[in-house]
Length: 394
Image (cartoon, rainbow, N blue to C red; front, side):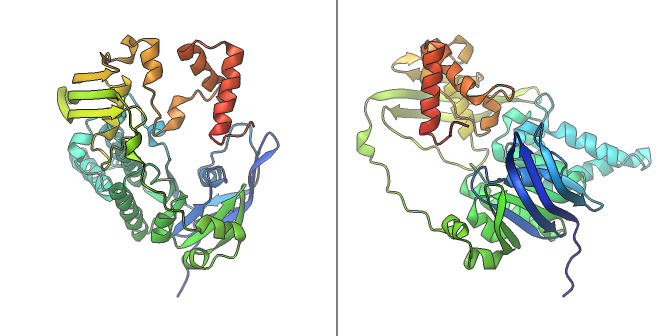
């Protein structure tokens, strides 16, 4: 059987920043209608390699090697899709603008209907349900999974021949993960190439035609997916593919006194001028020492509840109490102690950081502002916490 032509190639790519190689002599070939997976631990070079197809490299990087894309557009679905969505525009506005640009050569009487059809097709291909409601919302009113499908729809609407999907299932529930697999499989069936950057080996197994295993910026093993995943040759690949240990269920007997309660909460989003209910919670209680898991598919309201607890979503009724004291709806009205007590770890963690300041300084600043620590003490404490979380000094 004749092999599909190569539509993109990376040859001997090396990307260095401050003398440190993020990617070291990486080569790969991409063919239409296939899924090529780059797998490896966080920091192994997957994203840097994927972004090379878009001609995007870290600031100040020294780049050698060759990246060639033959006559097609490259779409990018980033791990943090909110970063590429305009927070000041409704979700459907950009899609409609893009579609109108593509039908400019049609007679004026046909443009609106043609643009509407293109948008509808892109949304269907991205499997974006309830598109009528979702497209009237702003990006921050969408879940991470919905934002991701919106970015995929944009790439498909632009006619991308290659989709770079960066960790598309990270932080997603099982149902959304299954739908993402179905989306990417459908994209490949249309003849579009997919470069999948992932550490979700179940997803890689379900989708990939070829697998490249990366470690420390280098490709340590590559080949057909069935061969690499079922009969790995490299020791690192074998370790990466080893079955994870099954963890026991948590001991529910350790929970202490009632710490946080939610009563009669109804949260709303503004959609088309109306305040639409998106979440209703009769009662929820969290005790000290307890880990309470809130599960549900993308768009079910998990993030909205978390934002209400943290004071990031003000448009809600009901009561949220901490240690018996009702929390103000807005974080701007909360005391320093209340701010310190209820902290938020974002799905898009990058949104919580200033890219122009060192990480250590930003973490230390939290202890200064919310704990009243002296700057030197705060830096030392931040360094210890970062080390405990597996982040080395460099």
